[in-house]
Length: 68
Image (spheres, one colour):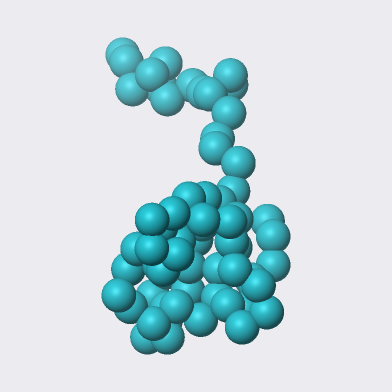
Protein backbone atom coordinates (compact mmCIF):
# COMPACT_ATOMS: atom_id res chain seq x y z
CA UNK A 1 0.00 0.00 0.00
CA UNK A 2 1.12 3.54 -0.66
CA UNK A 3 2.49 5.86 1.99
CA UNK A 4 0.44 8.73 3.42
CA UNK A 5 0.83 12.05 1.58
CA UNK A 6 0.47 15.33 3.47
CA UNK A 7 -2.11 17.72 2.03
CA UNK A 8 0.54 20.42 2.50
CA UNK A 9 2.83 18.60 0.04
CA UNK A 10 0.43 17.46 -2.68
CA UNK A 11 -3.27 17.03 -3.38
CA UNK A 12 -4.91 14.23 -5.37
CA UNK A 13 -6.38 14.83 -8.81
CA UNK A 14 -9.89 16.30 -8.57
CA UNK A 15 -12.52 13.58 -8.87
CA UNK A 16 -10.26 10.72 -7.74
CA UNK A 17 -11.48 8.92 -4.62
CA UNK A 18 -8.77 8.53 -1.97
CA UNK A 19 -8.45 7.40 1.65
CA UNK A 20 -8.06 10.43 3.93
CA UNK A 21 -6.82 10.82 7.49
CA UNK A 22 -8.67 13.38 9.55
CA UNK A 23 -7.21 15.62 12.25
CA UNK A 24 -9.36 13.77 14.83
CA UNK A 25 -7.70 10.42 13.99
CA UNK A 26 -10.49 8.93 11.88
CA UNK A 27 -10.21 7.72 8.29
CA UNK A 28 -12.67 7.88 5.41
CA UNK A 29 -12.92 7.92 1.63
CA UNK A 30 -13.29 11.31 0.00
CA UNK A 31 -12.38 13.30 -3.09
CA UNK A 32 -11.68 16.81 -4.23
CA UNK A 33 -14.76 18.04 -6.08
CA UNK A 34 -14.24 18.96 -9.72
CA UNK A 35 -16.74 21.82 -9.57
CA UNK A 36 -15.33 23.59 -6.49
CA UNK A 37 -11.77 22.29 -6.17
CA UNK A 38 -12.48 21.61 -2.46
CA UNK A 39 -12.67 18.42 -0.44
CA UNK A 40 -16.12 16.78 -0.42
CA UNK A 41 -16.01 16.59 3.39
CA UNK A 42 -16.01 19.49 5.83
CA UNK A 43 -13.69 17.66 8.26
CA UNK A 44 -10.06 18.75 8.61
CA UNK A 45 -8.02 16.43 6.34
CA UNK A 46 -4.31 16.14 7.09
CA UNK A 47 -3.13 13.28 4.82
CA UNK A 48 -4.36 11.12 1.95
CA UNK A 49 -3.38 8.03 -0.03
CA UNK A 50 -4.69 6.31 -3.17
CA UNK A 51 -7.31 3.62 -2.69
CA UNK A 52 -5.90 0.09 -2.54
CA UNK A 53 -6.59 -2.35 -5.37
CA UNK A 54 -9.94 -4.12 -4.97
CA UNK A 55 -9.82 -7.75 -3.81
CA UNK A 56 -9.60 -10.50 -6.37
CA UNK A 57 -12.63 -12.78 -6.42
CA UNK A 58 -10.97 -15.47 -8.52
CA UNK A 59 -10.09 -17.61 -5.50
CA UNK A 60 -13.08 -16.67 -3.33
CA UNK A 61 -14.36 -19.74 -1.46
CA UNK A 62 -16.82 -17.95 0.82
CA UNK A 63 -19.89 -19.41 -0.88
CA UNK A 64 -18.51 -22.96 -0.70
CA UNK A 65 -17.68 -22.60 3.00
CA UNK A 66 -21.15 -21.40 4.03
CA UNK A 67 -23.13 -24.16 2.31
CA UNK A 68 -23.54 -27.58 4.01
